[in-house]
Picture 1 (cartoon, rainbow, N blue to C red):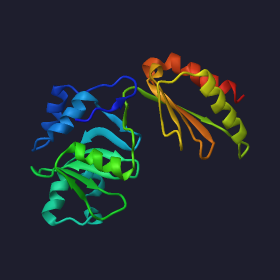
Picture 2: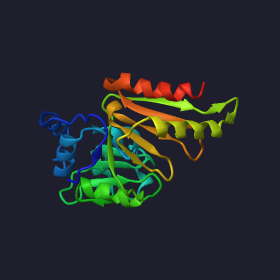
Picture 3: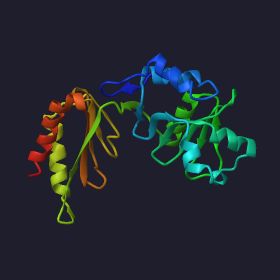
Picture 4: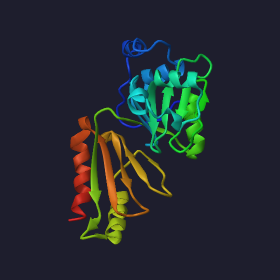
Length: 231
């Protein structure tokens, strides 16, 4: 399994938790998916691939009468209805596990009728790595997730010059451990808050601060630093 850069504290699944998931379904899960849960737990990869709580009822509850959205044979439809949904994407794709020894991982795309099949979990991650042209992968746990949204829209106007000033002062005064997407929408990783500060440099309309609850005190210092420069 390829190791990802991790932000903050992760909460891996125990082997007992994984066994409890498998006890809900009549088939085994891919080994690399179990390894992923056992190492990382739940969260997202680059805020694009969302590793969620496994749900054996998701397809049934949401698509029981709409499986013709995708081009699948009748026997495949039943496998999908009885599958375990494990992941979604920011674009609305659904990734589920079916009872198939050869290609158990299935992507049900939001914008295509053709499902995509994989022999295991990590090739599916590699597929999206290429699709989204991701150069650096990071894992962002959902464990104790909190977020603060700071808007630069006042009276219907985006204060772009103020946004630029806050970003400049942030880079001068705040230390960070890593950074991603510097050319587009920079995200500055700060491990002591278990999260990051994201600047909407395209629209210049907002800053998002993601942190973990156990690091709230440190996170509030950074949030206040930003707000003091807006008020």
